Amino acid sequence: MKSLIRFGAAVLMIFAVRATSHAQARPLPSADVQKVYDRLLKQIDQIPIYDNHSHATFPDDSDMDAMASPPDESTVLRLRDSNPEFVAAAKALFGYPYDDFNPEHAKWLIDKKKTAEATGGTAYWDSILDKMNIETCLANRVVLAPYLDPKRFHWVFFVDSFLFPFDNHDQTGKNGDMGVYVPLQEKVLQRYMKQENVASLPADLAGYEAFVRQTLADNQKKGGVAMKFEAAYFRTLFFRDPPREKVEPIYAKYRSGGVPSEDDYRTFQDYIFRVLIEQAGRLKLPVHFHSAVGIGDYFSLRNGNPLNLENVLRDPRYSNVKFVLIHGGYPYTLDMIWLTAAKSVYTDSSLMGYYVYPSELKNILKQWISLYPEKIMFASDAFPFNDAVGAEETFWLAARSARTALAAALAELVSEGALTEEKALELARLYLHDNAAKLYGEMK
Ligand SMILES: [Zn+2]
Image (cartoon, rainbow, N blue to C red; front, side, top):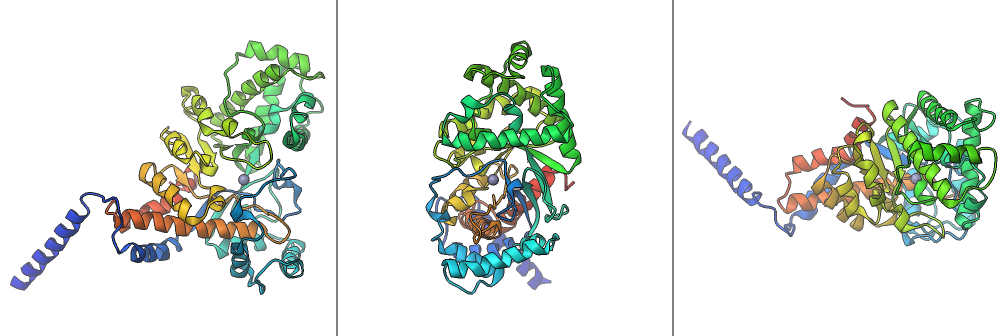
C-alpha cells in the first residue's frame, strides 16, 4: 500500500513537471522535435484523407475543366518536368523503372495509363486513391466521368458560364488568356442550355434566373455536392450589389445581340452572381471559389485577392451559404485564415501544396492550425500536367507533401509546448478528413 502511494506520488510529480513544462508555449522547439515528428507522421499516415479539390482525370478527357492552360504558361520551379519528385511519385505508384522522363522512358508510364483508360471501369482510380489512403475526393469537372466511382469521387460543377450569356467579343479580345477561357465558358453554357431544354436565351431576366436556378438544382440531383467559381481568372472577385431594375433592361438589350459595354456586362454579372449564391444557400450547396494565384500570362493578383469577397462572405443575407475558398488564397494565406473567422467560410491547401515545398507548407499549416483548425481542409488539386506526369503523380505529391508538412507543423507545436501529441492528432484528423466530411454532410 505504502509503495502504491509512493508510486502515485511519483506519477503526480511527473504530471506536475510535464504540466509546468507545458504551461506556457515556447518560441523554439526542444531537441525532441525530430522524434515527435517521426511518431506523429506514423500516425498521420494512417488517417484517411478527404480531398476537397482535385481534377481526377485522364489527360485526354476534355471534360476535366471548364478552363484550359493558355500558351506560354510560366511554371513554378517545383512543377517543372525536371523535378525529381515526379519520378519518385511514378516509382511509388507504379514501380516506374527509370530515373527520368526521357521520351523513350516516359512511354512506359504513358502506356500503363492508356491501358488503364482503355480497360474502362472505376477500379483504376479507386486503386490510385487507395495507394495514398485517400478515402473520398471531390472532382472538379464539367461532367462526372464514367471511370470515377461515385462512392469515392463527388462532383463539383462550374457556374461561371452563367456570367457570359451575351456577345463576348469584347471579353475574348481583352487578352490571350481571355481568348482561350471565354469560348470555353460559352461551351459550358450551351451544354447547360441543352441539358435544360432551353433552345435560346430566355425572353426576360426572370426567365434567365429561372434557368440558372433550375440548372443548379438539376446538377445537385445528378450528384453535384458543390458549385465552383473560377471567376478570379476573368474579372475581379469584388461583386457589387446592383438593384434588379438596373439589370432587367441590360438583359433585354443584349439577349439577342450587341456587345455590352464593360460596365453593363459587369453590372449584369454582379447581379447573376448573387442569384447563384442565393440559390446555393437554398439548395445547401457549398460554393467554391478559386482564390489564389492563377496560371496564364494575364492573371491579376489584385483581382484574385480573396479579400475582395469580404462583402459577400460577411453579408447576413448569405449566412446560410457555406463558402469554400480553395487554394488557401495563396499567397495571401494569412488574410485567408482570417476570412475563415466568419462562421460559414472554409479554406483548403490545394495548389499551394505543390507550388511550395513541404518546409514552406509547414509554416502555412502551422499558422492556420494555430488559429482556426476547424476551418481548414486538405486538398490536392491533382491535375494532369502531360501524358506522362498525370493527376496520379500530383495526387501523390500533394498528399505526401501535406502529410509530412502537417506532421512537421504539429511536431513543432508539440515540442514548443503548445499542444499535447493527442491534441495534435485530433487537429490532424480535422484537417485531413473530418472538417470536409462534416461540411459535405458525411459525418454527424
Ligand atoms: Zn483546381
